[in-house]
Image 1 (cartoon, rainbow, N blue to C red):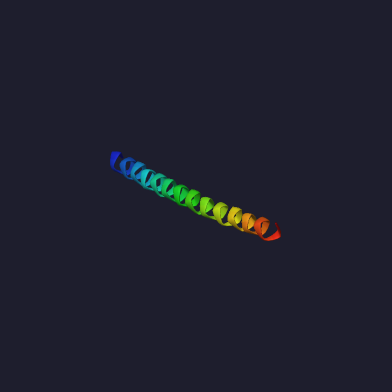
Image 2: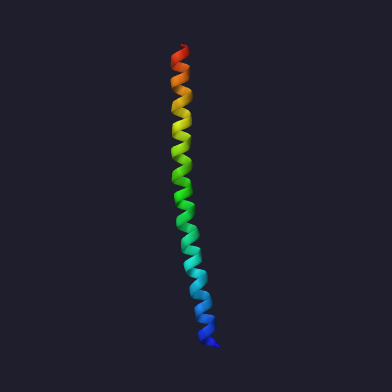
Length: 49
């Protein structure tokens, strides 16, 4: 009984860690996209001015 529960919590912990790392990577990707879009808009403004 305790063996099964131990395995269950272990799986949940690794899954949590996986999602946490995924979330961090998602933030990095989002920041990169924001930088690309902002720089693109900025260069367009510079081009038309």
